[in-house]
Length: 527
Image (cartoon, rainbow, N blue to C red; front, top):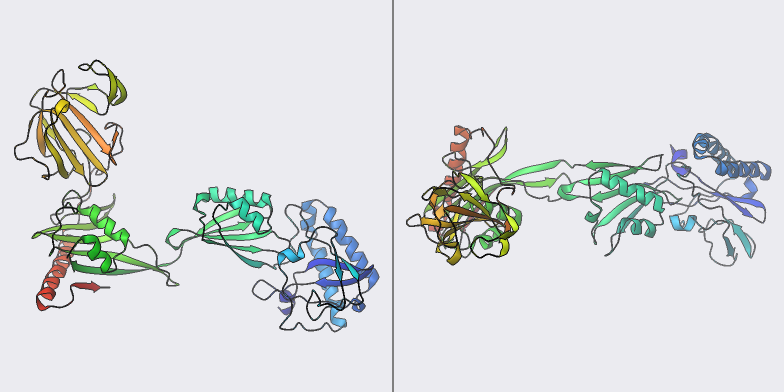
């Protein structure tokens, strides 16, 4: 075992004025790279020169032959070790010099001047004697791939700088461009974009003393790690390591004094959870307008940590409730065979699930296009919607839950209703003959609610509904936009699970109200 730790030789046969001088071995990767030196008097000139010639011949052979000749190289190593043992090799001291890969891999036939009066480049155990002796160092081989001389690997941590690329990083650590290209291919194979390499992060390499990269580790999201391992054919094999995750349920209840965001973050709820909370209730609660001091909330979600204690992104919300102006809104997650969905306190599925069509129509009279000849204005202009031809009075319905942002007469649009469906989506319904009584800005509507009737008000040549769809305030084609829809035959949430979760949420709100009355802290946090 001791021999294995001290071997894995870099076969650098150092010649000093024709005299075999030293072999430089290294320890394994989990120990310091200590430099040992063998005194020239312990080596047989003839046998060592023969081994040197054998090594030189081996360098010239094809790669397949080189790999088959590893046994011969290890024979050299063993014989050199035996010779060194006979000459009482000095033990390495605690201050032995460490060699970096850049110190070993020097230009071919580089010559170094050494003065015996100066400090030894190899530490206190240097065997260089005499002045102005020239050291001819054999260098690392650059055949592809190189001969692997044992398992000696050097850890290297690289901090990515602004503007760094993978090929540039490879060059900075002394690697070869061919290996960098192979690593880029491995990134693609693992479906990890090179753009995920960001300034400030660290990449972990294991390199040998010849400068070849054996492994590369890169941190991904959720505690995952991308590991690239070099193969004998010069490629890298990618592997994504997924850490064991420790999950803990956290229940947080609190009241609102100013805003939901402020109240949530003050209680240590992550931003991601706050965003998901708002999405769950969008369409039922307008948080920018409806939230009042005294409203309260409860959220149940997963905290996630790795085994090493690293905090990971939180898991999905398992259940949430919001008490707004005395009315309780609920969202409970259930993982059905069709996937996870949220349900309200009555077991109805939640979410911005859209109807594809806002009415029963006869035909589509005009499609969405960037250039259409307007039949009334007699000019070419974009047609930012779809025209559904239908008899006057045909009911028009909202395609999803939402809040009315405008309702009334709007010039060439005629009678129009525009509805916001959360922060991302909006729809508009033009040329209505009438708008449902009582519908105004701020009114809440549910998916399928009747909001008006087909007409021909404004700039219209006949009865039809002009239907527009917006994504992030931009017009999109209502017929081709990908809509969030409910799957067919969605499994209902089990009644027992619904009731037990609902009781848990209500109990949290009740405990909060009791705490507020008694003057206790204005939040409850359970894990």
